Length: 396
Image (cartoon, rainbow, N blue to C red; front, side, top):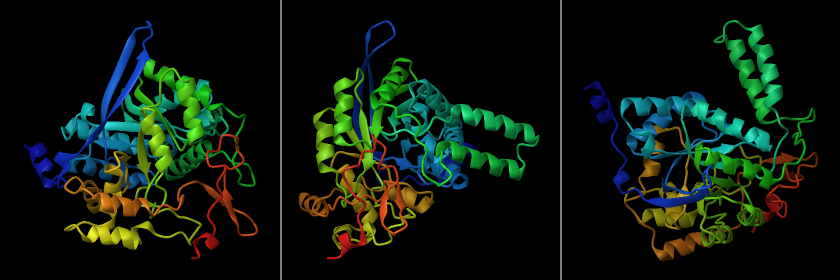
């Protein structure tokens, strides 16, 4: 009875029963050479977990599933998969949701691109999330960092030998620091350590094996450019089911979205609200949520905000969208977009706002004050033909 009371405490998001899904289909040959097909329905709206503080995330994911979310987007790089796992386990055990009804995505991090590290990467994620399989596993970026698994194991051994009590505050802080160092290996001057360049196809072939082994149902890409996606499509045995990229009216990705749809791939938009919480060095970037066109469209609807319009913009383009929040009120509000639809005229207005503005690619500031892409010199960097927008670009 207590469980029933608990469920009633939290009211479902308005319209959550009208949530729409998109079909993902992955064809492959099993270890006996027999043709197999994995089919899944990915909910068009999911909870993003990037930059979500671990101590708030357990409650946030639990709350999201209670109000009606059926899709959670994670990544090893975020450093919070254990907390997502705790929330999922609790919800599955309490009957809030069933595993088969929640679509879970994660991503292979840059330090695990070497084919010998891919299986270890997914195993660590499955362990942290306390799952047997993932619905979707993406290559987080097309470029790799230095391999760090052996180094981490060695340093962890030393750290564990130093502290008997693993709840000791100093141990917890040092462990967090060590985990950050292995996710983002850096030189003394603060630049990234890339190690030997790993080809995207070598990584992809190791990811294909994860489908055959039943560790993941679908595989895909994230932050890839059109030429890189085309290379994978041409050379792969198992086709990518999804491409996930930053996408919003200031960066509408029209060409990339069309290319994916033409090739049987689906598209997920991250930072659909223009990444309002990003600690962006580029203070001159316009705030998408304050755009007048977006506000005017929101005013047409009763009790809807600019955030609702931006989320619905993705849904009405037949895309998947993963706004992030750890605030209960916003988590719930973000899901309340299935009781509205944007008119064609409004969609045209929103598409016309495109200015190819990226909020989310990692940047570095040079001594002269100019800003460049941090990983721009890596041969697999996806936005090498772009420059970071400067203040002058925004002066009318």
